[in-house]
Image 1 (tube, each protein chain N blue to C red):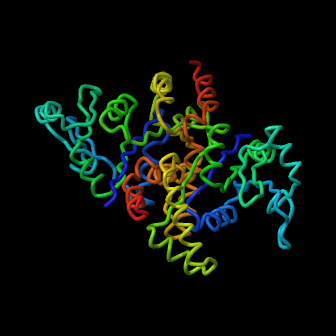
Image 2: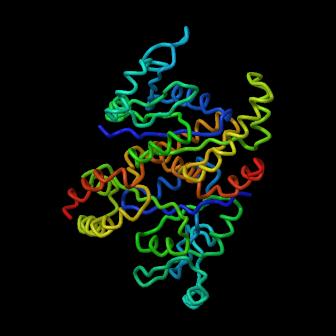
Length: 204
Length: 204
């Protein structure tokens, strides 16, 4: 079976990464979503192994030491990381694995998975981003300002991603993300085996 | 308006390039097919400016001297080439221009259009290619053998293309080619303007 592709999706906070990724996975059957490990307590509506792998701080430390995580970071005193085994299992089953991840984590990934396809999601404009954040009504004005400050830092890394995807219409954006992954499967560098087969058949 | 992308489509002769490209253009409205110039006589069913630009040998020579062709070659005593002006006009109108072209021509193109997306079309197997050629019934056994010999030479260049596309089911193949072009539009290197706009809006 042909190996799947690791797809890293980052983007400004509030740009709609979660919605786009959820819709992509719902619509096409070639994807698997990576499940993160975390030391933060499980919320009532969360499921172990689906939303997160909930582990103790000791278990997380051990995963770090055993290099069982392909990236990890600390937020608000809790650890979050991506277990390597799960990702590799999915890839070898031919699934394209989506990793919705921050800029920092993406940099770690690229070191261990240089073949990963990296996509940075942006809003059509900063004005539109602000208006989405305000309409969502989840954050205070102060929190929104903090998000914009964070976007300024995140923006510095846009150029490090292979693709810059504008999330204007969600429908269109999901289709484009799927096209990016479909195209990646056809990249010559991922089709050495096919080339070798044709060389052999042509007796070159 | 965002500039179009130059898409070079090559592949083994008999693999179905023409059919795939025709279907792509029929199905989506973002494409334009490049029209070649040639010194060979016009056939009855051919239209000047649609099938080819039919020109005299002197006119063709002049185009070469004026560097008005982005590639050209000689087959069976006649010149064939791609007029630069037509391609550039279509690109600046935002059309993605498809260039169905031989391996040699593709190498010339890459020099003047390093941003071109290059796709090499292959059959699922050499056996399948042979069976298609035989079923088509247009060639003698000897001509088919000559095509296979040519495929051996062409195969040496597969690795120089960005994409290797298998033409198994035409429907699927057209979709994949379209995905490759859609993905190319999202490449970060083609979206410097968008990045700059966001930098400005974020006041970085």
